[in-house]
Image 1 (tube, rainbow, N blue to C red):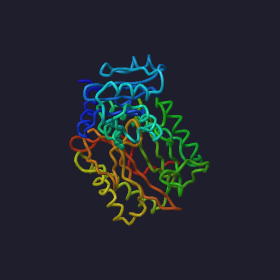
Image 2 (image 1 turned 90 degrees about the horizontal axis):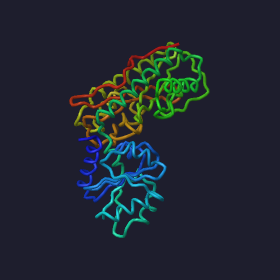
Image 3 (image 1 turned 120 degrees about the horizontal axis):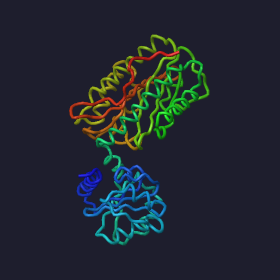
Image 4 (image 1 turned 180 degrees about the vertical axis):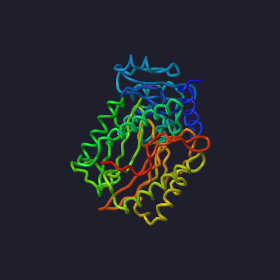
Length: 361
């Protein structure tokens, strides 16, 4: 059975579970996941007996190269919603599911206007990310390659030093080296935050020079074959205070506890509680305000959620981050993040960078 067939099967199981006649996927990553199509205009309609890919005339040749025979390919001569409606009208569809994170309200209303009478649109929030949450071998390989490139990028940047360079310079260096090593893009705008700026979890690099004695939070990731990586290291620019080292050790211990807890079965909430409990015991519970981690794949944030709202149980093949942090306003920030794939009895690291505090000049 092909990868496309397996994925269509997962969609059809979802249809049965939710008593739907068909599911519409319209977001770029979702269409790519199901069909392999990398263009910017495409939609997929999957029913119990049919699977149709819909695009426009600009992508006729590309669709021929990328879309497998499991899909009927339809070329729209107008807005895609027109061809979607025509396909629905020729099928016994009354309950049409869609991901409410896939379509804007306006797009949803425009589609509803052209659908045949009697067809009801059923919103399933986040269903696409859930469908994509368990990765196959090819996806895991792509993410592993992206993680390996990201590892090389950081070590090359650190070899040139941090002290005397601005945060922006370091971020630009990360991105330039990533391109040189074959990355298609960065997974997200790189974070480089020194000293008290590191207390902002999503800090933007500034034209501020990194000084000796500062901790520097570096959060970056690259895209390879459409798949993202994600990693964070907090690095010492020269010797840092004993207090900074102590906080780093708390985060490191919490991070490793979370990694050891990964396995099929526990929910994201339960994994989060393992790391969060250690940070709370150390007296920094109020300084860890975000979740422990998240899924990674075609998008940088996917299911499952490792956090207080993480109700889904982990499954073998999920790729997740484990990234606890402590953020002290006006003083410093520490975050350590690895990317891992859940295995039958634990998890394998995709990140292979030192966990001990690295000191660079």
